[in-house]
Image 1: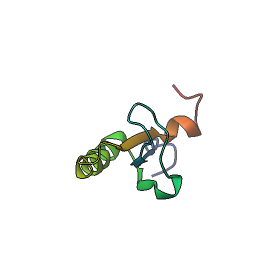
Image 2: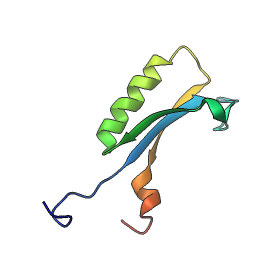
Image 3: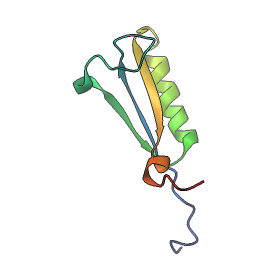
Length: 78
């Protein structure tokens, strides 16, 4: 398969940590961020996000996020 026939990679980063305030997005301790991983598509990133979020449901301060890395790498793409 050549680079032209391969499907474009849509990388997604899943990470999280404990927030200072549940109303904001400021992390309590950046050295304790949990980087779950980088995933090749939104569906697999969402599964990882959901699993980690459900595993930490007892801590109201804990939040996980999905970052669309492909939008950061190629901001001009539609």
